[in-house]
Length: 318
Image 1: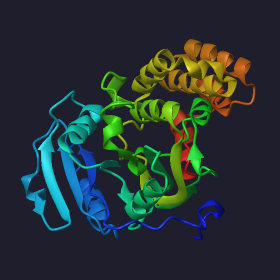
Image 2: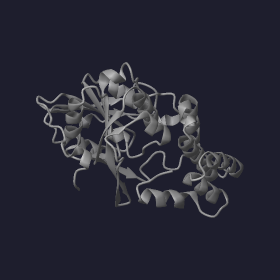
Image 3: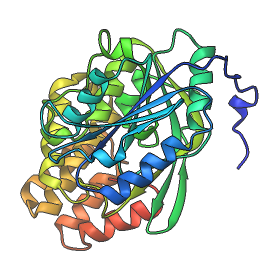
Image 4: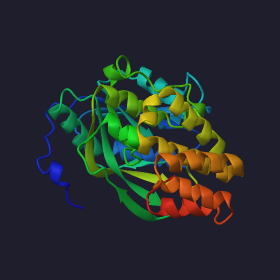
């Protein structure tokens, strides 16, 4: 795959390369986690990488420990709120590196990921946050999701979650996480939407630097803990509307979230609530497809699982 036009003159990494810390949060998925860890350790990045494998609600696997000249692995237990948000914050606070990266335990990185991101951050010293596009793997079918831009703004994220800006691609200046941006919010229901919340808080300050090449491979389907947790998703989306009211001033953005709530209720069999949220969604933006899909599920014309499977097979989600 060729480079995107905006990155024809990609920055060159300035040596010596800074030490990067990686938070690999995991919960009882040892085989997937080891695959993710291997992709981190096999980066072509010439600088040092320290990986904190944060075990959430399970004992640390001490066999993962590694002490090398440029690669270090430290298995630790989540010492904060149980869940993904607390696990990530345990890792952030346990590191002392200038940069912190996230990787989910069921995803992998392409070898050049860190090199390209750190070079971009060095070339843009005012930037605090860098993401990349992704390749989605769904039951062996790959789909590339691009943003079509070199930065992601606050307004972009009010209109859309920008799903291609995946948390497994995040590289962030640690001092910003400890001060201006803030840690991952541990009050979000079941840590659902914690990445969107973090992106909004970061982009409200400064645009997110984005490398529009698929440098992470995201595995969708049964491996996700949120695959069919519609009640959790509904509560999380309501939390987002309460804590980020600016979403409501975007007709497209609020229509999208209303449509997601409609679909969640339809999947749960709450037909009345599904119709109510779908109506609010379509009144805000009559072209919102999630509302239409929710009406189809609520009416019994199609199953929620069939809709989700078809969307994810093409790299999209509800």
